[in-house]
Image (cartoon, rainbow, N blue to C red; front, side, top):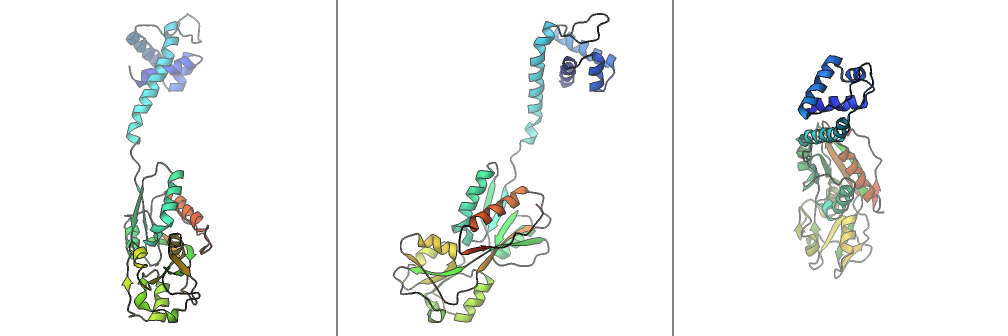
Amino acid sequence: MNLIDIQTFLTIASAPSLSRAAEILYISQPALSHRLHALEKELGAELIVRHKGVRSIELTPAGQRFVPIAQKWEQLWKETQSIHLERPSAPFRISNVDSLNLFFMPRVAANFLKGNPSCRLNLVTMRSNAAYKAVENKEVDLGFITNPHFFKKVHTIPLFKENLVFICYKDAPYQSPVLPSELNSTDEIYIPWSNTFLMWHDYWFGSHSDLKVSLDNMSLLEQLLKLKNAWAIVPATVAQTLAKKDGFRIVPVQNPPEPRTCYAILNDQHQPNPLLSAFIQELRCTAEQFTEISLLPPQPFSI
């Protein structure tokens, strides 16, 4: 007994006549009769009633009992054939700059996974230039960066602008409004947020200013800001996250740096993947909840 035998019988059982069943199966009626006889011989029972001159199909009691068995047999075969298709999906790989880890990514990733529970999400932290190379080489599917570069095979999509603000610990002697000209760079916890921030910083403190601490990530920022007179310029969402903890203050500053822009980057030759637009949309929805962030007009891109 094989799948062809089962499908032949189920077609016969649902057809008005043997000739019609043969038409549905695209075989001759003699071939259909041969299949039916072979199945009956294997089962040891007749499945249809044969009356001379009667063209309609009538199942024997054995045939009626065999219908649900044949249906189960066919379903089990379909399920076994789908096993090779049930492979784990490839991970959805995203890179982002370090400053997005503190606030954005935990919220965005959690909300995204609620809507895409079968997705295997792989998050890595990369600087903007490294992210471009990873996207170009298809090592990641989507990147979030703050310093745009030009790579032939990478599409750069502006997402939003975020204010950069002044933050310090509660014991620091800074009062509103803070004047950049009165700040001492030797008390600064410095992180190069964007190219526009670098230009602002060079204008007020010089390109070779002495710094208390220079960081390339945010893992130590919170503890270092507790040093005497320490201060930092950080993205507004980072400052708000720290300000919710005991002791940190956001202080208005005159002539602040320009807002930094966050971009999404993806390979121009990427494979179609609806997860790309879904994740970008989730990040935009999170960003628009904050007054310190201005969403930029969405740009169409091929998913």
